[in-house]
Length: 337
Image 1: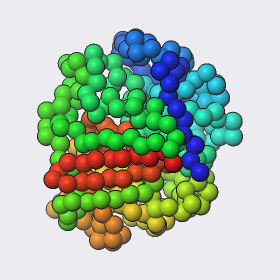
Image 2 (image 1 turned 30 degrees about the vertical axis):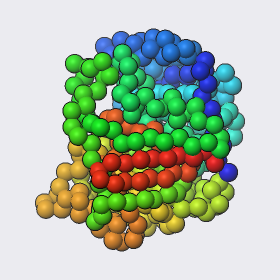
Image 3 (image 1 turned 60 degrees about the horizontal axis):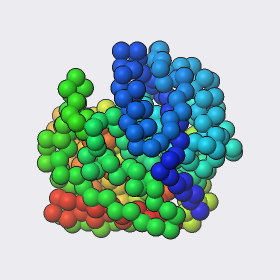
Image 4 (image 1 turned 90 degrees about the vertical axis):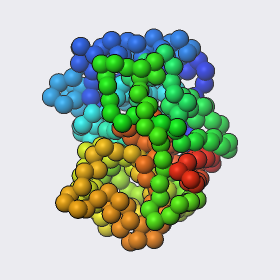
């Protein structure tokens, strides 16, 4: 059984930094984001950790965990969005009070996906992998990013459909943001290893592979337990995005996941676009995808809208997903059941 939060029009948003905070010279980005959220009718409750950054984290682990626990237990907060990702969220996983979390959305990506995946696996509460707060500070959002609200407003038992973007951002240009923050210049093409058209369905789970791989072997990465307790052994449809791994490191991580049983009873794997899929010698990212597809005998879809080359589809950990790829275009239907 998966528990689905529900975002309402006048919701209170909790803003906290369980990974990296924002250095003083970039505080304006956060303030812009808060003003934008308030203009949309939301209230924003902002924690202290957002405004500091020291030694690769917003603040010491205990302070980050205390502030996050307070927001997780605050019935008035319907959605928690960190400003962005970072490096060391994993330090607070064993300090979270999983037993007393009130049902609410968590939205983010990159290092935040460690928290999202761990929370869904431990509690069965759905979490949202998608945009972060500072990328919502623009005059408006592109059509792909903007769907975070409609996805999080989907009622239990209902479905929501998202489509692949028309264009994506190849590289960041923070000093020259567009009205939508991103510079969407490159044509989006979804691909599949060895195939043209693909249809897959299963329970969605995933995140940034650089960091969620470190949940393997911990109490926060027990995929078999989650399957048994929360999804009645339905197949899992994985989605991953690669932030910094070359092809050999990515391959090692995927093999480790396979050996740890993460891909048992999986229906397919989706990979986001990445500018970090650097070949090692003549070992390319296409080689990685094809080998994985051959070994697991499941479809592998890649260059989807997920990760550090925006825009991003909002993926819900725990939801039932149907993914169709045809002619380079993709469709994702998520059902909250």
